[in-house]
Amino acid sequence: MLKNRYFWLFMSPLSVLLLWETSTRSGLLDARFFPAPSAIFYYLIFTSPGEGLWADISASLYRIFWGYLAGCASGIALGVTMGLNHTVRMMIYPLVALLYPIPKIAILPLIMLIFGIGEMSKIVVVAIGSFFLVLINTLHGVDSVAKIYHDVAQVYRIKKHNFVLRVILPGALPAIFTGLKLAIGYSLVIVVAAEFSGADAGIGYLIWQSWETFSIKAMYAGIFVIGALGLAFSLTLSFFERRLTPWRDNDK
Amino acid sequence: MQIFASHLSKIFSRKEQRTVAYENLNFKIKQGEFFCILGPSGCGKTSLLRTIAGLETATSGELNIQPLNASKSGSIGMVFQEHGLFPWMTTRNNIRFLLENNVHMVNRDLDAIVDEFIDLVGLTTFADYFPHQLSGGMRQRVSIARSFANEPDLLLMDEPFVFLDYQTRCALHGLLLDIWQRKKKTLVFVTHDIEEAVFLADRVLVMSAHPGTVKSIIDINLPRPREFLTLRKLPVYQDQVSELMELLREECEPFKNNQSA
Image 1 (cartoon, helix red, strand yellow):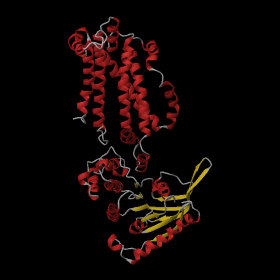
Image 2: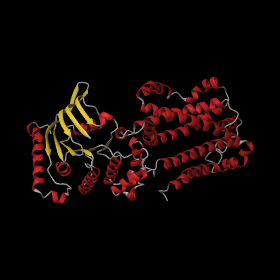
Image 3: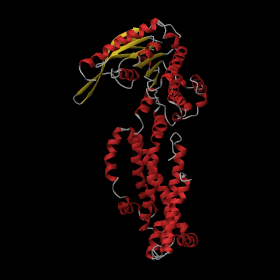
Image 4: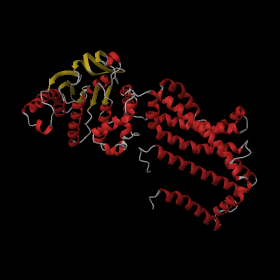
C-alpha cells in the first residue's frame, strides 16, 4: 500500500488538510485567516456555485484551453524546425534566450495594449507562457534523438515527412511531455495573475474579489479550485504520456 | 553490386589536429561475395564502412559503387554495432517502416514480407514486442531481418555481434550465413575478431592501424555451407586463423617498443 501511487495521491494532501483542520479547531491558527478546510469545502460545495463559481471556472478554462493549445502547438512546431534546421536555429535562438526570461505577466499591459482588455489578451499571454516552455523542451528533445537513428534514416533513405513524424517526433516525445507538464502549471499561474486585473470573470477574479470584500472562505475556495485543476491537468497529461510512449518504463 | 576503391583516404581535421582514419586504400569487392574487413580498433574500419554507406565522405581517392553510383536505384542495408532499432516501434513496425520508405517496395505485400523475415529470424512470437522487451541477441536478429527484408544490393555490417555473448554470437553467425546464402547479397562485414572473419568470409581485408592501410587481402578457401563445430577442426581453418593472427600480431609490436599502450 505504501508503494501505491494512488494511495499517496490521496493521502499526501489529506494529511496536510488534517493537520490544518486540527490546528484551526484547537485555536492554534486564527480561524478568520485560516478557516478550517471542512468549512472551506462546505462553502465551496454549497455556497460558491450560487455565487457564480462555475462561470468563473469555465472562464478560466476557456482562456487556458485556447492559450495552451496555441502555445504548445506552435512551440512543438518551431522546436522541431529549429532542432532540424541549423540556420533557423541560429536565427531564432538568440530571440528565445532574450525573451524567455521576461516574466510573461510583466508584458500583460503591452499585450492588452495590442489585443484589448478582452479575452484575446488573456489567451495570448497564456499562449506565450506555454510556448517558450514547450519550445525549449522540444528543442532539447530533438537534440536528444541519438545519432544512430539519423544514420539509420539516412542509410535506408527514409522520406523527410516520415523522418520528422515517425523518428524525430517520437524520439522527442518524452521531453515534449516534460514541456507540456511545465506549461500547463504555468498556464494556471498566468491565467490567475492575468485575471487579478482587467477581468470580470475567472478564478483569479474570484480570488481577488473575495480578498477585496474580505470573503476569506470564497478566496480559499478559489485557491482550492486552482489546486484541484492543477492536479487534474497533471494526471491527464501523465495518462496521455503513458499511452503515447508505451516503449518507456513509465512506472515512476 | 561491386565496389572499387582506389587511393581512398579519410583525414579528420580539427583545428590544428590531423587524424588519419584510413589512407591510400585499394581494393575491389565482388558481386555476391562475403567480404570481411578485419583490423584492430582504431584502424579506421568503421570509418571505411560508413564511407561506403554514404554516411561519411572520403577526403581523397575514389570509391565507385556499381550500379549504385550509376543509377541511384540500388539500395544499401546496414546493421550497426548497437542495434539502431527505433525504440518506439515494435519488431514488426521496425521492419515495416523501412519497407514503406523503400521505392522498390511499392505495390508489394509488405505484411507478407515482414512476416517472412520475422519468421526467418525466429521471432514470430515477439513480433509485437518493443526493442526494450527483447534480449540483445533478439534485437540484432530484428536488425538483420530488417536489413535483408529491404532486398538491398549491398549489405554493410559494423561489428554487429560485438556486444553479444559467445553462444548468441555463434547462433547468429549460423543464422547470418544461412540467410546470406539464400539471398545472395554482397556483404561487407567489419570485425576485429579473427575467427569470426575466417568463419564468415570469402575474403578478408586485413587493415593495419595508425594510419589504417590495407595490409593484405586473404582468400578464405573453406567449403560452404559452413558449420562452426566441424570447421574449427579442419587444419585449413586453423592455418587461416594462424595466418591472420600473425598479420595482426605485427600490429601489436609498436606497443612493446614505446610504452604507449
